[in-house]
Length: 532
Image 1 (cartoon, rainbow, N blue to C red):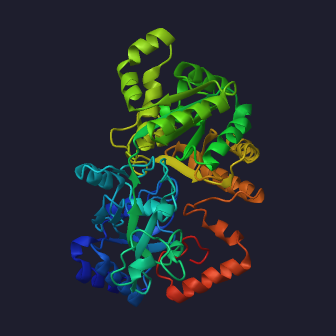
Image 2: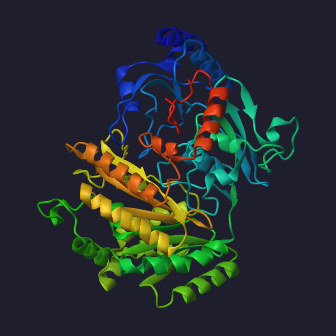
Image 3: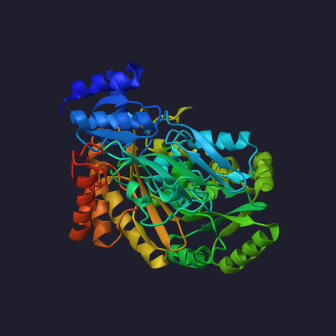
């Protein structure tokens, strides 16, 4: 590796101001929400696809590993930290063009520097009747960054990779390819038909190190005539199986088109407040009795569902009627909330508390941003839950890396049945308490048939021994889930070894692709691979 030679070449090609080697900047990129040892040698920031090409060719010439990021806010999975022990970060935030927008056909083409907030603002400025889908992460997170990790959100377009096409990709060699119909001249359907003709290759550039996505076309959701969120609560943990099995047919037949999120009581509590240190004993553990006290005060249950209905008023009314009938007598409550009702609830917070004794403002702290997410409105409020174990208030501009929040995600996927939901919960409960953490569980019906179980291992990185305990807990969870046939839908930089569990033929195929596309192994070595 000739790092100095590459550095000089990058400075000439990109401009010295876009090649950063200052220690403070490098330290920021080396910091995640868990302990890491990787070293960032420099940060390079190309401004367009041509400069990405040139930068990659330089990396090949001088044999310097490059790790591309978008915004670098991949919190809980590694943030901006590379997978290789020593490498250069290629930050793509300057590739922030928004083009090829069509109100009629509901699509837009974006670069990796386009954040959730930037696209939302663009649609607002256009006075568009189209919605994007947003995740609960920061509004400053990259849309492409989440899409190539196959992330998900809240609306009927919540499965992000399922709603994109026509990628522009810079290969490890520095060549550019376009996927789908966009590889043909004058292809009228390039932005509307994702498969193109011939082999479909777009998926190769998600959760891989086969190329850098510098553009893609995103499909947008037409604003429905009417929207209404719904919230379902059950009082007891043993009602989970029935809750899942009652919801499943509505997701399968698309009566409910949105992603459906199901959080347990510990998860809801962590979304409302920081850890109640004054309520725990000497062992520092939060008992179920204490959580139950908060549940009564703030009106949440053992399991709490949020979803949404979209369509005409008649269609929503029909779906609402079906849900009410199906859950009658099975749940503590089922509530429906549209924009008018939410606005009224905000105005009536104090009278509501006087009449019921329930602390509605605390409940609205969770419900209001989630309500917006179901309409594609990004929010900064959800990320505050990463401060759950910190002994300080959530700052005005939270940044989990900078603020030493501990967070590791574990996200196994199962078929959508109550049986599988319970099996995953038992694995979680048998592990997290042993390592001193709370069972912060959020299950999501990410499509018509699959249930993604996201476990949040949240802690304070400034507390001695917590990084090590969190890593051990995460590893034990992964091992136990894998043994039971529950594999993760995405991986963090410390869990890439899970890919080794695939059949040998698959591993050999992927290795052959990598060696063909990237013979010098300079693009994100070790990303979704054991080859570093």
